[in-house]
Length: 416
Image 1 (tube, one colour):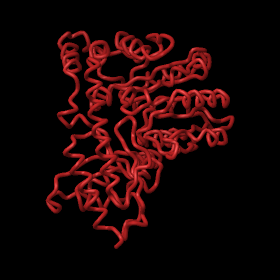
Image 2 (cartoon, rainbow, N blue to C red):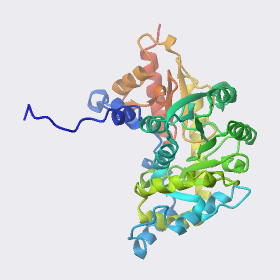
Image 3 (cartoon, helix red, strand yellow):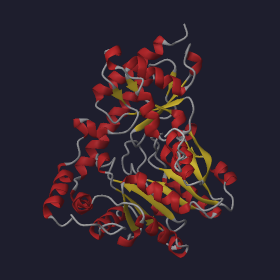
Image 4 (spheres, one colour):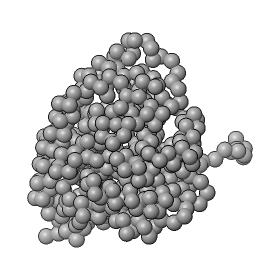
C-alpha cells in the first residue's frame, strides 16, 4: 500500500479559500479555550448568533408558520430551482415596501442563506481576468469565495473617521474595464455603520460611471438604532443595476434556518439583456435550494410578523451597544472609533503600544481565549489588522461579563 500511486490529491485552492473563512479562524481560536483551567465558562462574541439567548427568541408567528407549513403536507416535494412561487412573491412584496416601484416574483431567487447567494453571484461573475471591488473591512465569505472562483479582488477602504463611508476616490482608481461589480454591506458587517441616502446615491452614480453592477448585502436591513434610517440600495435601481442579498437569519433571529434570497432591482433591465439573470438561474440549477417547508412558511412570516417584534429587537440592540460603547471607553489599550448604528457588531481598535506582549490582533484574540475563555474575531480576518470585531447581540449580563474579561486581560498585559 505504501508504494501504491493514487490519482487523487488535496485541492489547494479549496484549502486556501477555506483558510481565510471566518469559521475556520474562530475554530482555531476556540481550540485555545480550556474552561477547566480558567474556571470560566466560554463567552463567544466572535460571531453574531443572538438566537442562543432567550431575550432574542424569534417571533411566535415565525415558529407557527413553520409548523403550519409542515402540517399542511403541501411542501414535502421538490421545489423549483428558483424557489416556490408563493415564497418568492411574498419576498418581492415585502421588499417593495421600501422601493419606488414593485418587484415581481421573477425578480426573486431563494437561496440557502445569504452565503449561498454570495457563492452564486461571485461564481456567475467570475470570467477570465475579471475583478471585483470589495470593502476593507468586509465579510470574509466574499474573500474566500472570490479566491475559489479565481475572481481578482481589489479593496477599497471604509473610512472610520467618516462613519465607515466608502472611499469613492479609491473606488474610481481601482476600477478598470475588467471590473464587474462593487460590493456594499449596509447596515455594515463588521462595522455597524448605516449609509445615508446621499452617500448611497453617490455610490450608485459612481458605479454607473464605471459601468459596474452593485451587489448590496442587506442581511441586516432595518436592523438600525441610530439616527440614520435604513435605505435599500434598490432605491437607485434606475441609476445602476443592483442585486440585493437578504435573509431571514438576522432580522427574524433564525440563523440556523439558512434561508435567503437574491433580489434583482434593475429598472432598465440591463441584467436581463446581458444574460446575468439567466446565469443566476443556471447556477441555481446546479446547487441545492432551501428546505421546501421553510419556503412554505415564508409568506406568513413576511405578512404576519408584528412590527413590535422588530422594534423590540432593535431596542435590545440599542441598549446593548450603548452599554458596550461606554464600557469600552474605560479600557486602556482599546478604542472604538465609531459607535455602531446598525447590525450586531462593533470594530474595536487595539493600541498595541499599550501592551507589553501582544503582537497583533490575532495574538490578542488567541491569548484572550486562553486566559479568559472568551472569543472575539481578529480584525485581520475581515481585512483590518490590529482591530477586533465584537458582537453585541447578547444578553446584557453576558456583555457586561465579557467586557470585564477584556478589561482584566488588558490590565494584565499593559505596560507599566
